[in-house]
Length: 219
Image 1: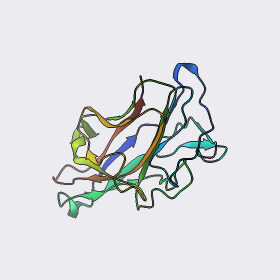
Image 2: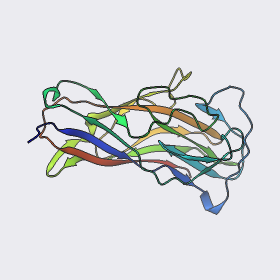
Image 3: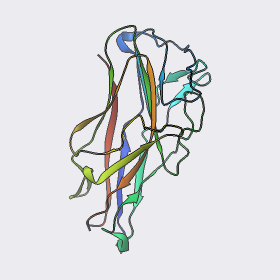
Image 4: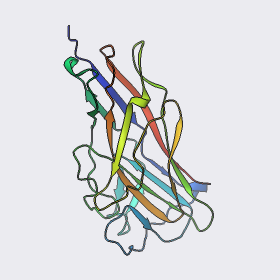
């Protein structure tokens, strides 16, 4: 019988493309003054919102050149396998099942890291307030009757040429919804998140899984 636990793994909520009040998203954007995106002003227009977490869909070219974002039902995962001899010995990096390196904004290699999860999108509106990026996590990852608190998983935010990451680094607060970023209207944003399991305790062997959901909402 194998005593090697496989832990933890969690599913990222699916990327979301939302058309507010049934209005279509415009597909033409003015190029920003900078060459690569992380927080970039876009033109005002019909109220619309877009969020990509991991795998996404962009048709007709890059977003900057007039590409159109679309719905994508893919739910990506990140995971780590902890050998029995390594239980409780300190942090271990987690690996996504799909790595997105290039930005849908301009196809720049924005996430040139070993195991990043791309998170990006925009909020466009002719007037009004800001959009909010948040993440909701359950209290625990589970393996049968065994549990592992979600606060054992953290992330480091980065991005090529992004000296101050747009989405701050942080740790999941188990069983809550956390606000990650406030996005002013008519801005595109993006970051690359690399996840880590704290591995600070010896826990029963098993495959611990659960799902978190990233949401971008606007008034």
